[in-house]
Every structure is written in C-alpha cells, then in structure tokens.
Amino acid sequence: LPLSFADTMLNSYSQSSNTGNSQTFEVGRSPSTFNTNFRSTSVMRVDISSLPVPTPWEVIEATVELYCTGCGGPSSTPLDIAVSELATDFVEMQATYNRPAINQTWPNPMASGIIDEVAVAGIGWYGWNITQLMQAARLRGDDTILLHFTAQPGTSLLKQFRSSEYSVDQT
Image 1 (tube, rainbow, N blue to C red):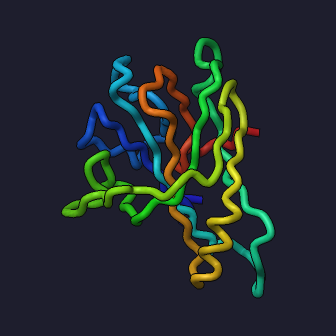
Image 2 (cartoon, rainbow, N blue to C red; image 1 turned 120 degrees about the vertical axis):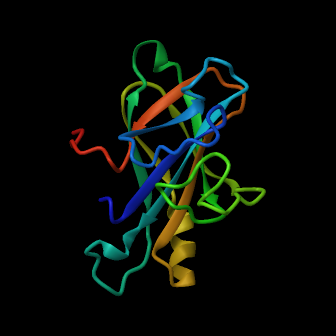
C-alpha cells in the first residue's frame, strides 16, 4: 500500500511539524493541545495506477475506508468528518500545516467543497464516498486523487485513524 497511498496530518498548533512517517493521523482538535482554537486536518493521495486493475475500466463506485483507532471511551462522541478534493499535491515526508512541500505554500483555498461527510464515533471502519472524485480523475486520464479530511473548526473532539504506514491488518 505505501506505493499507492500517501498521508500526513496538518497540525495548526505545531505548524512546522511533519507526521508523514507516523502510523496514525488525526482529524479534529489538534492532538498537541486541548485549546479548541487549534485543529488538525489530514491529507491523502490515492494512486490506483499500481493496483492490478484490468483495463479498460470505469468507475461505478469508489469509497475510501479508514480505521478509527482513537475513537473509543470518552472519544466515542460522534464527530462529523468531511472529505474534499485537495487543490494541490504534497510530499508526504515534507508536508506541514504551512506547506505541501519545501519551498511551496498551500493554495487558498487548499481544498474544494465537501464531497462526503461521515459521523465518526467509536472504534472501527468508516467509509467516505469518493466516486465523484475518482470519475473526474478518470475523465482527466489520471489515476490519482488528492483528499483533504476535516472537521468543523472549534471542535473539542479528536479522531485518530491508522495511516498507510500502519503495518497490521485491522480485521
């Protein structure tokens, strides 16, 4: 999976930190503070060109599924997490809250409107419908989509998901 997926968290409290090699990423309040003025969002690149999909093919339905590991106990209160199309690509081991890569800045806005939103509560699998994004990528002749996961600003909640670096299957 690491060849097909890249992901990292963007933390407004720790704006110059990169978490591209972390086994988890967070969405919601910043994991670095309880202050709700700081937030975390996460970005993901999905490249299906290296997957064994026979050609020709068309997109009928596409879902990105994430395993929420930091969602139990007091964290089981539902948090609406939205996915949007990220406006620019990023370098997984360089991206921070301030930049997608060294010597670059995030565009404003850094993502399009919400494509899908899911209420994430307890530990388990959650899926976002990204059919529209995958169909648009195929029309462009591209097998790569860029995703931005966000929660409403000011939330006190934080949800933690397994990243592409996580090496144990959660079934």
